[in-house]
Length: 257
Ligand code: ADP
Ligand code: MG
Image (cartoon, rainbow, N blue to C red; front, side, top):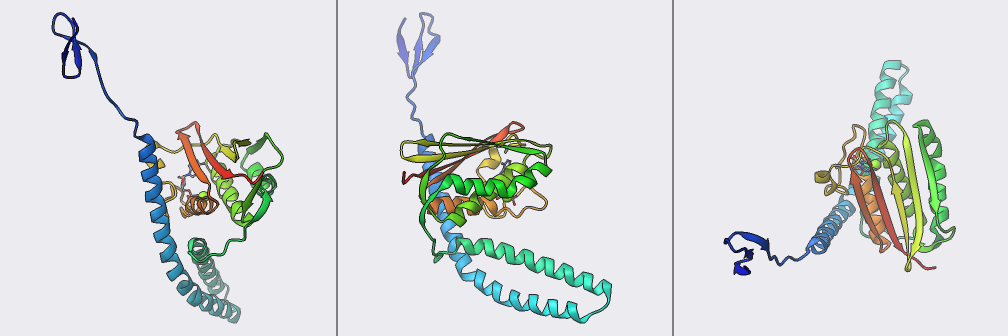
């Protein structure tokens, strides 16, 4: 017994009963590679957005102005309805362009020291009515009531609003959205844990790509904007999900105190 054959250890009858394997865990390396790929993608989109967004906004302004003018001119109800549709569509384009402009490079962020807990509370309060209407309860489990970080508060609000909205939309039959906040070694960790439909494994990698949406009314820009903002704040945004069980988005940001 104890003869070796390549990586298998054979028994007295020459049958392998054990294997020796040298393995290297490459999950971390893979993760880093994925992160680099994503940030390169975002940088590219940012440059594109900077160039194109303004060019779209200008003609859009005259389109809206003249459409409103024509709507006021007409007394026919049917035509007025058409103009309303035009105005809605113009607003939709304007919204999408606006989201892209957030990614544009020379955006000046207004950084200051803020208590991220109160920013979070604001965002939760803002969506509380919508949550109730959709039978979603939001339970706050904050281990601390102060966590000061350097941030552009409006941008962070946008991250919280996007993530909470997504969580609500992921629970069409209602459910509970847990928001946990804790401080761990110089960082604040904010987790949003829903009981929603979840995200299949093969789709997780597409999160944050522009226009990746599984919703009829979605535009697939929300998460892209979230990833960009958290990156600008030197933080990370991670996601874990299990189909029909739920999804957890985890934001980690460096603390001032
Ligand atoms: P949108 O909400 O417009 O679809 P997002 O960028 O916010 O765009 O989200 C992209 C996609 O990621 C969603 O369409 C959905 O499939 C998935 N997703 C995001 N958040 C969740 C969540 N909490 N639970 C399940 N799926 C989610
Ligand atoms: Mg969304």
